[in-house]
Image (cartoon, rainbow, N blue to C red; front, top):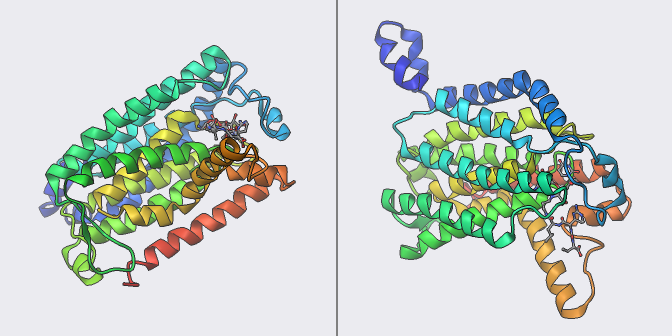
Length: 356
Ligand code: 57M
């Protein structure tokens, strides 16, 4: 919005020329969402705690250390979504359809998560929304940006380490839906320790901000042999807002957490990462940068499959972060070591832009 109102005045006030630069608006989108979290976070968390009473229902069959978390409020993801939305509307170009699709996915998946969290709190258990309804709603919401991206551009995706892109044709639509749902649920599964999901999320969002900027720049895209996506640069501003919101939430979610993000946050953030990756035509880069989320989801698939086929578990408990908890690693050690792996994967993902 500031771009639309202030940039046109740059002839009278030359410093407003800054607003044309995506890098400038990305940095201040990050600062804005971070400050919004700092300013309203304490009061909002106090309100959640007062409203939720016993807070997040803690499962009895989880790691014993988690029972100490009883009383921690959930749905802190509402703070993340509010700061992302305010900052994006302030700093991004509102005439760019990719921005509105990104907000649709983020807020739409957030709404699904809110309903799930609401049911858990109302029923005082960790069941929430039935898996089939959650999946159906995620699919219906994903279909809209999938159609939009199919209409906006060509169905090509970048392939790490190769100069050639793959043309998926009509398959790109269903592929986008798969990426959105997969990323959303992978982040959701990962959100099982204090800061474990929000840390890697800001790292992946920062990497995607760089990729979006490069993909939206005709010369950089040509130089790097990646698909040129007109208008993709604005998604760097959205990613900047995500990074700031995640850092701001981490301020309160770091161990020992004062608040959990809830499905309202986890599903939304995962959907947002999935959408940006597809919008810049680099979904495979997301699989690398978001490799921790992939690892967490795969650990569940392996565990459930093994148990169903052989009656034996591969891990002490899935997702894999619980396995290390039950091995005796203190929670902060699991969290920070997983962050280190996530940071390494984000950097490696960016390096693949040059290695091809
Ligand atoms: C999402 N939710 C956390 C919090 C957060 C199929 C199976 C793998 C599903 C999985 C599951 O239930 N996943 C749901 C993970 C929960 O966190 C809430 O949920 C939101 C995210 N969706 O924002 O509101 C608990 O995680 C802990 N937590 C923190 N700090 C945070 O910042 O400590 C969360 C955020 C919170 C809190 O304790 O209550 C969760 O873990 O449920 N199931 C599991 O993850 C369970 N694994 C399992 O059953 N494994 C089986 C089979 C099915 C694979 C096995 O290994 O044999 C574990 N989780 C729990 N108890 N809570 C183990 C049992």
